[in-house]
Length: 244
Figure 1 (cartoon, helix red, strand yellow):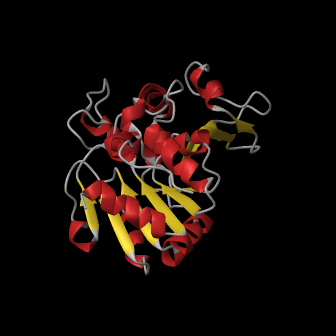
Figure 2 (cartoon, rainbow, N blue to C red):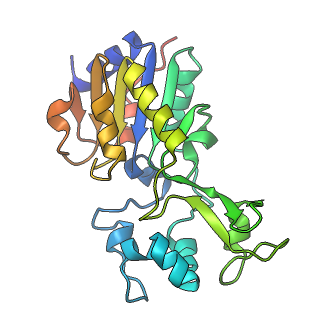
C-alpha cells in the first residue's frame, strides 16, 4: 500500500476523527503562513516593531493605529475561500463519522466549507467586539473603518476576537479540544510546525489508534506519528475518496 492508500484505510476504519490544523491548510486558499520564507513573520513592515511584536496585546494597547494598519493588511483575507482540504473534511463529516476540527487558524474557512464542530484555539477574524459595551461586529466593519475602529454605539475600541501574543487561550475551548483529542480514534495533524504552545502540546493527550501528520516540512513530532506525509494537503486529499 502507498501512503495515500494507508491514509484512506485509516480514515475508512475510524469512526471518530479529530483534524488538528495550522496555517498550512489555508495556504492553498491564498492566506500566507507565519514562519516560512514568504510567511507573515518574514514580511517587512513600515514599523520598527517586528510582526510578532505588532500582534501582541501590549502593542495593541500602546499603538492601536499601527496595530490595525498591520492587522487589516496582513491578517484579514475577505476573498479567501475554502480549498479542497477544508471541503474534504467537511464532506467526511456528512458520512456519519464524528469529525471535529481543532484549529490554530483564525480565517473561518473550516466553517465556510461546512464543518459543524470547529474549536478555534486562536479566535476568528470575522468576530470582533467593542471593549466597552461588548457589541459584535464583522470583519467588514474593521476593514472599512479608517484608523482605529470604534463602536458606533458607545465609541469604545472594537477589538478582533483573536488571541494576541501575551493573551491566554479560552479555557472552555482548550477543554473541548483536549477532550476531543483524548476520545478520538484518529488524529490528523495538518499544516503546522507544532512549535506554538500550548496548542502544539495538545497532541500528547491522544490515546487512540493512529496519528497522521501532513505537513510540507518535518516537525519535532514526526517520530510520534504512525503516518507522516510531507506534501501539500490539497495533493493528499485529491488522492482520497469519501466512502460512506
